[in-house]
Length: 200
Image (cartoon, helix red, strand yellow):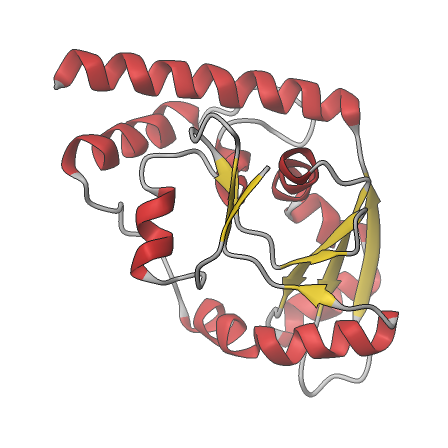
């Protein structure tokens, strides 16, 4: 893996991700069951448009998402305290081909990482009832980060500042799923290249 040291969300970070499939959107290429996603065509079109125009495709945000971004440092500190571990923040991790990558919330030692979510209170209650649903909601992203960083496990951590209980689920590396994910990502990269060459 190649770590690009930059602040996530910065102009430099956006430029590094431009036109590249990234783990946060791997769910648009593959389902949790390992089947091709019906969203793949639209996602590939968006990435082709980014490469041709040099402009980032606007992405949807709402108040809860903005709040989550603001709370992430606090949540990261809580995770470090709960797990007695140190989280290494990184910018964008890109594959050696420079064609796809991921932006982890943090790396843990040499074997793990963490995906941090700061959901609304009602969503948090849902995670209390079914902790596995936290993993399901971000499974492609988590396995994508595991794949691209060469890690063995990834923690899914949900945090709410006024609720006493947090949710922490460890996800083990799933090589069978990762093989299917890699195939879909590489197929998307090939299609992006073909379309860019066609329309340039």
